[in-house]
Image 1 (cartoon, rainbow, N blue to C red):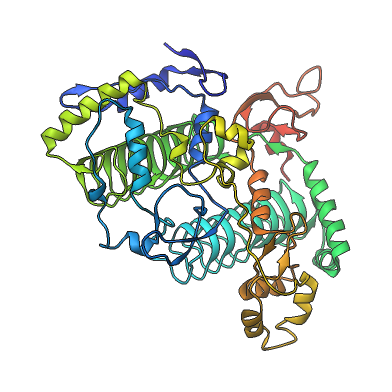
Image 2: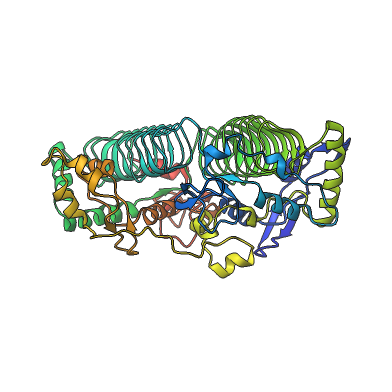
Length: 583
């Protein structure tokens, strides 16, 4: 039977469904011949997802020093990080042994307290990077990157800058969650698109500006909810010459740019919104779901089955509850963040990936680890507890004792405490989707970055227009070399006054696409893109379409679950009414 519960953190009421209870029973592990059932969570879905997002930093980078060699590193961990940080090449080397930090289980103390002490002592790499990245030092959570700068959570990106969630994309700047895109700027949620600018929710579009929820559109400007159109402006047929004139006017001056951009944004804001972005999915609720089956209350999930309360899952995953940032080929994973690539049977883990299985309450255990409980920083290990090696028989008996202990302390089945995160709450993804004050963060024992680590530059600041006029490769063939030599960081954010770097490849990109140099710090720009995506929460609403013929009040009766909160101004339509509105 379903259960009504009260969140221990925010006091919100929430329901444990029958299917949730069935899942917890399904994944309950057996140690030493005894099955230990997973209890229902003590926190509501919103607090659970917030905790996991606090384990991810997607947009902030800091200059720190390796605790091993003292060499300078660019890391997503701040200088205030409580944890021991090595350079990734050092962490991957034989210069240290994580098993040397092993310790015995102490039944007189809570187990998670013992794990936290281990977690603080075992070194962590300064960034989570695959070995196949090339000429892309200032990145995080990335693989297959080539000639990239300040990107994170990306795979196969080339010549990309200031982006998060870039998959197999090239020459893209200031983008968030794009797939197979090229030469795009300020695109949030884009698929298979080329030369698109200031757009959101686009599929197979090209050479367009200010699009929202468009598919197969070319040479369009300021449009929403269009399919397979060319030369349209503000949702009306136009001509090639008219589109070129709009773009020319848009690029002619900063005043014109602001004026036309605001007109396009206002027009798009007034267009109806689809209640959710769900495609080719059965029996599923959430947002941005593609080829899913029985995926509930989840967001940004592709090719998955039997998933709930999760976000950012990709390809061939099954039986996943309460997880964030899960990679390919996952099976039976509960309460985890940043795990993936052929992993199965995980409970309460962070940063576990690459063919691992049967791992519980562990952090940064990778590359073929199996049968671990409460371990940190291990590779190719089996039958370990608190970084100590045991025989299979002794491992089973000890883990059974520990779980019984955790059942008594109320720790069993719960996720890692938020204090385990390597990032300050104000540096993490949680701060964008669940903003709280420093005082509120301390109440939930979250870390907080106190210092101001803005980069400091000597000399004069340039304005964007001065840079463009001085270092324009169209006028000066030696411009690129001069930029590389002379400029290391010369702009000041007009919103925060923070200085920020600009690099030669970036300026060339702006000039090539007739775009202005940015006037806002990259972190601020990324925060605005995060906020273009709705929060990870569903609301029950009624369709707002008022087309005649629905009922005596002239309004559709269909209800749905959507991420658009009831107090938001958008006109939100059900699937049927939205499809009628698409041009």
